[in-house]
Every structure is written in C-alpha cells, then in structure tokens.
Amino acid sequence: MGRVSRRASTFIATLVLLLALGASPAAAGGSTLQTLINQDRATNGGLPALAWSDCLASVAMANAQRIANQGFLSHTDGPTNDLKCGVGATSAGENVAYISSGINDTQVNTMYMNSPGHRANILGNYTYVATAWVVAPNGYAYNAEEFLNAPSLVPSPPTGNTFYFAEGFTGGGFTETLSILMPNQSGSATIDFYTAAGHLPTITRSLTAGQVWVEDVNADAGPNQQVSAIVALSGPGVVERTMHFNYGNWHGSTDVVGTPLPQTEWDFAEGSTLSIFSEFLTMQNPYPAPVVVDLNYATDMGAHPVKTLTLAGLSRTTVAVYQGDLTNNPGCTASSNCGVGGGIVGVSVQVKSRGFPIVVERPFYVNGYNFGAGIIRDGHDAFGANAAATQWNFAEGNTLAGFNEYLTLQNPGGNWANVTLTYQYDLGTATRTLSLSPMSRQTVLVFDAAHHGLGAGYVGVSVQITADQPIVAERPMYMVRDFGSGPVAGAHVVVGATALSKLFGFSAASTLAGDNDYLTIQNPNGVAANISIAYYTTGGKVTKAFAVAANSRHTVLVFSNNGEGIGPNLSPLGMVVTSDQPILVEKATYGSNPASYGATDTAAYSPSSF
Image (tube, rainbow, N blue to C red; front, top):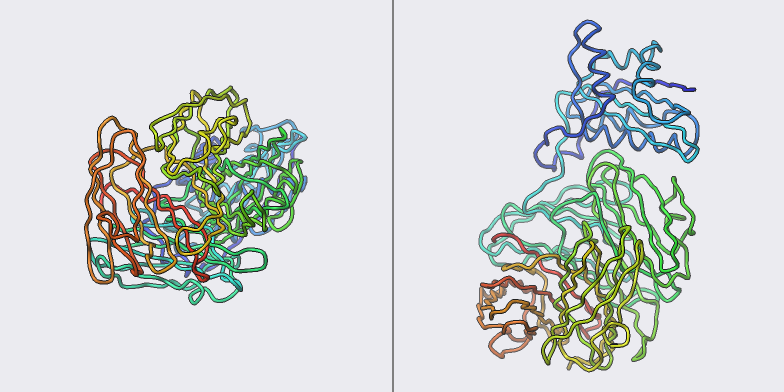
C-alpha cells in the first residue's frame, strides 16, 4: 500500500542572508531515486539530468521525518526551503509518499510517474534534486523528493581561518566577548551572528598584526539574545570566546577557542541532570536549509533514549538536557522535551546530524553545590569530540586540597573497552587500568586511587588515556582555592586531545590583578621539548624560551616575571606556543576579580602554521 502527494511552487527568491558565505561546493551525495528520476527524464523527451544538492537533501530529510512523525502526508514549507538552496532560484517542487511495506525506490518512483502531478515534478523544468527516506516505528517508509530550478547552489559556510561558536548569551548578568588575533599579518575579520530568529547584519573589523581585537557581542547582538557566531579571518589567526556571568545562582566564566569546521557528529562524555547542575546543548545550523538531528543519549542507569529534532536554517537552537524523559521521541521540541529529564547522575550524548554539518557546544552550570571545600556557582562549556578515539591527552590537572578532578569516559560502541590511564605528575608516572562495558559511561575520580585515580596531594597532573576500542573522554574539574589574589570557587572542563601538536594559539589572556593565567604543558615524549612562547601585548611581541623535560608536566605562570611568563598588568594578551616536539598545551585561568570571576580551561587552536 502507498500514497503520494505533490506540491509545486514558483517564486522570485532573494538570498540576502547568503552574501557573507564562502565558495560554492561541488554537489555530493546522490540516491537510487535520483538515478531513476534521471532515467525517466532521459526517456521522456531527452530532458537534462538533475544534479544532486546536499542542501535539498537536508530539506528532504526534514520533510520525510516530519511526515513520518505525524503519520500522514502533508506539505508545509518544503518548496520555500528549497528556494533557499539556490542562487537566483525561480521555482521549486516537492513530492511526498509512503509505502507500508518499507523502503522501495522502484515502487515509489512508479507511483510518482503514474500520478500526473508528481510526474510533472519529475519531468519539470528543474536543475537540482534530492530525496530522502525515513522509516517510522510501525515499519511504514516515508519519502520526500525536492526539486529546484536555479543557475547554481548557494555557497557553503566558509572554511579556512574560520571559527564557529554555537553558544552565546547577552541576557542580564552575562558579558560576552570575542578576542581575535592574527599574529603575523594585518587583515580583517568578518563576523556573522545567528539567533533563534535568524541571521543578524554582518560586521567587519580591521585587524593589526600582533594585536588582539576584543569584540563586544552584547553591543553587537543586543540584549537577551541566545546567539551563535561565525568569525572568518582574512589570514591565519585564532578567535576565542569568553563569557562572564553573574546571574541568579550562577557566578563564573567560560572560555573556548572556536571550532574551525561544522561537523556531522559531536560526542560529549560529561553530563548530569542532578538538581545541582543545569546542562544544556546549544546547536548552530550555519546552512540555509533545515537539518534533522538525533540526540543519542547514554546514562549511567543503562538507558539509551534517542531524541530527534529539526534545526531551522541559519539559526541557533538550545536544548535543556534536564527537561524530558527517558523515552525515544522522534519529533521532540527543543524548548521542552529533547532532554532526558532530571535526577540522572551521569549523562553522555552523541549529537548526530542526518544532513548538513552543524556546530554543538554543551554549557553546564553548577547550581550552588559544595564538593567538599565550599559552594561553587561557576559553570563550564565545551565543544564535543567529532568521533570516538583510542587515545586522549589532558595537560591540566591537580589533586591538591580543594580540587576535585574527574575523568568521564564514554564507550559508545558494542564491545568492551579496556582502558589504560597513564598519569604524569610531580613524582613521575603512574598507571591505572579499567574496563568500560558496551554503550556505557563511567567516572574516574583522579583524586582517589581507589577509583582509578592517581590520589590526592599532587600539584600538577597530566594524563594520557589509551583504549583498545574507540571511546570519548572529558576532564571536568571543580575547585575552591586561593590562587594568591583571593579565593576562587570555580569549575572548568575540556574534551581530551586525540593528537599532539607543535603549535598552539590563544587570543584571550590577561595578567591584570586577580587574573591568574597558567599554561599547562604535557610532554609525553622520551626526549625534552624546547618551547618558545610569543606573547602579543599592546606594546608589541615578547618571546620567552625554555625546555620541558621528557615524560613530564610543566606549568607556566603567565602573570610571573620568572623567565617564562610575561609579567603582570597586561590585557588584552595573545599567546602562540611552539615546540620542537609534539606536546599538548592548555590555558587554565583562575580569576578572583568580580567582573572576570571564575575558572576556565581552554584547549588551544593548533593549525599547521600562523
């Protein structure tokens, strides 16, 4: 049994929002239905073949998912979204159908060709096509075909010297900035902001070589905006986003370097929906068409619910992980039920796009909880990993009194994973082993040797994690400690690095009074690493050089004049670290100033060159 429905629309399209995007990509993808459609066109008057469009494929997937969720055929905004996929687009059409016995390309194509309206779309005056299938829980297969007449496809978002940020908020008590550095050449930065309502006007800033430019996001986006950003530089550089907040029960900071590319997979090992935490997922769709996204959760209770939602084109979407329940939901609503609900100690999630690459971060706030040394109201934020891996490295770590360091490990696969933790610390190295069951999540207490940790009382702790199956690893830390300028009750997190590097860039540092910035360096090699740090100040570039011993962890006090740091009272400040051996560098900040209060830990940008 099957049914079909058709809709065609003709418009004059205006694509103002797409002018800031980069070069047009080559068409990719393809489907059996595309082949059948082009065969039909060839045998009916020798009509030209239709090229595949990934943008149309994203629209098709969104519509197939929508009709599968509702269980009946209908048309909404498919052709309207199709028109957004083309430059100079003039017309668009859509066919939808279902087959009760499951996916069957030949059958649905015959159904379409036997229906005059659907046949008209297949043989119509179009240049591009894409198709998608979604199978509902009852076994019915729902199909959507999208058609477009346009001279060319819209460009993809920019790549190369580009930094993406999904998270951002300009509400009361939140201050957000973007710190931008091009170390070796002058140029420009093009900044595009996206809210739940769409794209804001593009901003362009001139940049001077070796000088940090600080962009005020609150002023750019206006008040009370949930905002994501894309920053495209005219040459090599680095962009870092800092958020300070003092709102309700939250007081602290987050700091991340932007990700250079959207991806189709984002993996997060850390997470909890206990009442002492507030966990969110922020998602940016930098493409003009909607995209279907699956949230594949794994909890320490053994539950694995899947939530599915559609992200509008050129938009930012927020999911509260603590809202929802542990059932599957193929059509969840981001504002209410795309999470797993409250009261769950450990929550991991894989965010996977069925179409275009997207950008995902996980903001996480502590709601006034005492881990043993004092009340913490800070938060942390991270981009997810883009795939599970068999090696993860972490440079920062501390198990002195007042520090609670954890490792959260997720095994997304179907096999047991045997894991080795190699700690590099004050007295040398130590090894711990554990096993992760399939589709599970486990927490290591680094400060507790009885829970696979190193133990308490160590100033500097790095760790390398290896596994015989791909896993995902993060390192959340919570601390209450006076770093010399006043007590800091803070929290930070970082996703591990799957590879070492010889070049690291940061664009947001400060050595003003109360700002305690450190660089933590992990050298897991059998030889010493010769390090050079270029500090970019408002007064010029200053370089420091030193060595880090083999198989060791080293800390640089950026605020110190000890021969490695730059000294006090400098802001804004950029840093580029180079090494003659592959190493790992993180930037840990512990701030006691009210305006920049809190703890952050930032993974560097590691390009091939600046």
